[in-house]
Image 1 (spheres, helix red, strand yellow):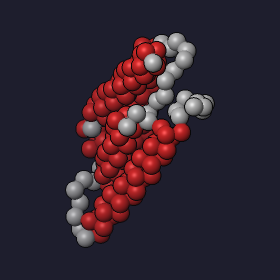
Image 2 (cartoon, helix red, strand yellow; image 1 turned 90 degrees about the horizontal axis):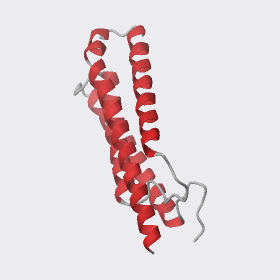
Image 3 (cartoon, helix red, strand yellow; image 1 turned 90 degrees about the vertical axis):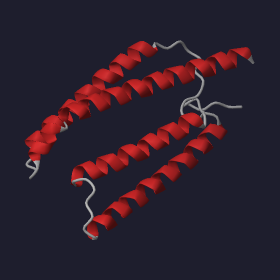
Image 4 (cartoon, helix red, strand yellow; image 1 turned 180 degrees about the vertical axis):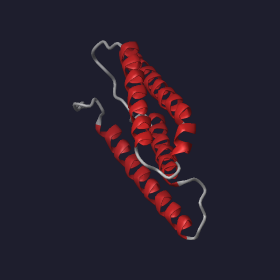
Length: 151
């Protein structure tokens, strides 16, 4: 079986594409439902937060489904340093979240005080998600490499 540049075989790529298409449709339907509810006067969360929540939920479901269907990463042949990658990813995610918060504070929103209230949770969640994803990917790669050596 030929491995591609991203080290996923054909079956894994097909699963990834199918899950990606389903996740996109789910995102689209959730955004349409949110817009429809907004049109009828139902506001469950204020504007920028509702889109971020919907996008985060859909992205999370997408990643969990990819991992559970063994279509997230392929087996790796070379030695890697997962700790260094994890540390770099956490630092980069904290920097991006900080930049996002600075830009949101500079922007003139009518409810700018609410942005200050959610700054700490956003920084914490972004860093925690980056750590979780990095750890899961490292664990999956290790398990796949271990299984490939046994066969």
